[in-house]
Length: 281
Image (cartoon, rainbow, N blue to C red; front, top):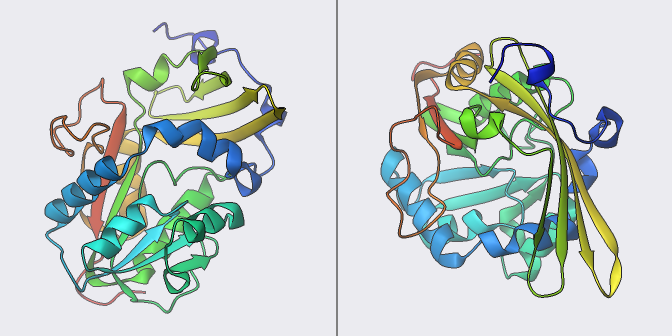
């Protein structure tokens, strides 16, 4: 793409439409409807299996699913015998998790910047499927990563999986409409702003889910999208060591395994980091 300032913005919703800590109210029924067709128990099981193999962890490990949403990965971690806890700010998403049968004792409402657990409570912290980057203030992303490190025992691992600031993100369409089933239409309005070096972008997204029998429902967020370089810098600043970034989770159970080499065209990125073995602040 061209290097002018104009080329680094996509027409879409005005900033005000997705500002104001929109993440606090965005994740509810509209989100669940919008992404329901992307989720399946088979895919969730496959993704969790990939994570456990990557980090070499198994039954009995203490895991925090930070931003667990409706609990689709949490369910699979529990099924594999992990002592897994899901943390999410959204009461709507946690209610959906409970309706699906997840135990109350495994679900906690709270802010990932201030996990309501003692330090060194977990062997693994997992932030999956773009649960990171929604704070209006970019400094709060580092605050969250630092909180993740404190939550880990010395030697414990973080895995952070999200959208990659690569070619796919840079070409995100400003407007998009598509059917969701036989009677529902989804309309997206997107605006992307990039830093001059293309290492970080901000996506303002307003998604409207329209059906014949109810008023339109709106899902509006602001998301910060990072490159390998920026995520590596953030993890380092948060005190992690042994940092590595790779391609993110596969989106099809029959596709090549997750965590292959990261390419400029990769749409998703996963980074891992370890809390130093020697106790730190």
